[in-house]
Length: 452
Image 1 (cartoon, rainbow, N blue to C red):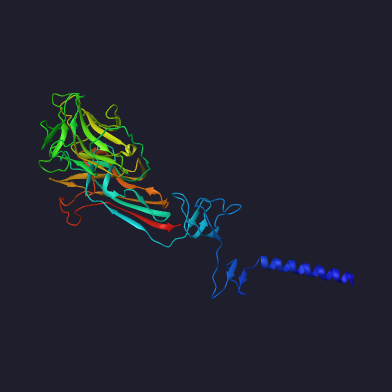
Image 2: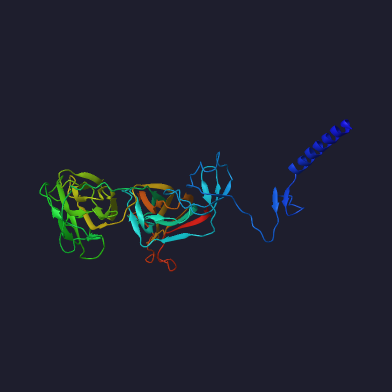
């Protein structure tokens, strides 16, 4: 009897082991005797749900709440609303991708931008120009995830210089992204009085406004309209292009290698959330000198260069913006410090000055750049300009909710052969035979394609 009892126990243990082995290698079914062969777990119910594990995550970077540590593919229902900027979590389903927690979404989200006007660039100036309208400004996206940024741009060569032959130009269109600039370091001991209400604008249509000539230079700036006295230098009118519009310039005739300084009023930025200084400049002439934009936050005791440029840029106006975030919380005075060249063909001009409580977003970094070659041709006795070469840019990028971004579309031109200044977003209604496309304007869209 004793021998038989031991045998029965061995038989029962062996049977259990065999059954466990069978179940280990089969699908598990709950409320079903025929679990799906493609599933490890098949739950069947018509009046019950599946209750996910509830966890209070501390952020998308939480590596400690799950012990010993989360593994790739782990799924939880988060119950907390917390986290620092860029790592916020809200109640909902999250999965771990190996480096961070990502939320499941079902929402769609798209931002669209259209170029508003044509803008030119110079073959003598490889400085980027921003395409008007294709600038997001500071934005925050409502959902973390993968966003697709799509850009369509158009670059056209300028008019033929010598109409006896063809011409061509090389340039590029690019998507750029700004880095954050916290600012807020303005000195409380700067200048006093002056401008306190923004936006501030000055185009010198009624005089110098609040600007003033410096006494610490060689010559003065001159207020002028409809062209400077010398040929092949200086603008023919203000940057608006309107006849009789005014601008400020430095007259180089009989003033070779001379310095001229134009002082701004004091700009009070103590209560400004951000500040950007924008202006138009014109540097046309074969012996062009240089110009500096300088700033002082100690009432003129010392000056710091914010921007400088030199050399012949061609007979065009250009726009430049400077981020004044370092002066937020204090006050600042600006000045244009120009120096003529060794010959009369070095007239320098400025116009259309603006200071707004917005930010340039710091330094732009190129995300993707497309290079183009475009041409202008001679057909018999008629000059035929290329309507434009198009550029398409497609970028997928992860963006996080709660983080500030800024995207812009930029253009530049660095080489031209027998063509004048090229353009981006060309007005084409004056082109021979063109009846369908009055303007070739660029576009930019930012669309959420994968939500976390």
